[in-house]
Length: 164
Length: 116
Image (tube, rainbow over all chains, first blue to last red):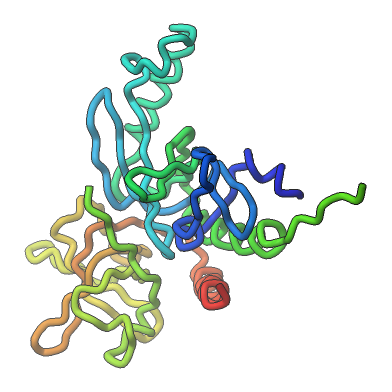
């Protein structure tokens, strides 16, 4: 798997690893890990904080045992100018889905969260696009092992440029 | 929203006075079988192999059943007699978790972190 393919992949990173990603100058949507550009991430952990502002956002922290990843789930799709050019029925669906996700994220649940890697006031976070609540009590362990395997066998591999 | 401290992963057997995790106020994630629960004080006792820990559950809204495997995240409080109590802020029932897999994976995770 080359560096180009990782850019739009939801990379499974442990929190201690995620929190060391470096911003790339002039590329606000990409972050650097060991020389590779990343833009999306997936995490699994226990929801340990919840700050809910109706119709604005839900901020929460995911603790995976190696660190806490701040997450933000936007709930302002129907009033945000960012969505004003999109089809109203699509925006309504996105908004409904975000509202549903926000009700699932409760203190103590194990959540699998996917989204864009972003930075707010210099702190890394995930801008959430998907939330799944894990019912299997082993899901946290399996995520750790996935992260270890992927880091060693995929993410840490140095990309070799194809020969001309 | 203030940054929340991550609960360091420890087994109850590792939580000895000589452990670097045996400090007042440190955030921990602990796992054990619920052995006892006092409704009046909301103090639970969890056990794992030969070790046990008291957990203050007064801030939790959790259905505690004796014999269940429970995981808590919270801050360790050391009382004057050096007895440790975890003041839990999060708790979850994890009946069905493979505890042997958990212990083995925890070691792999630590080795991985140490190698970074």
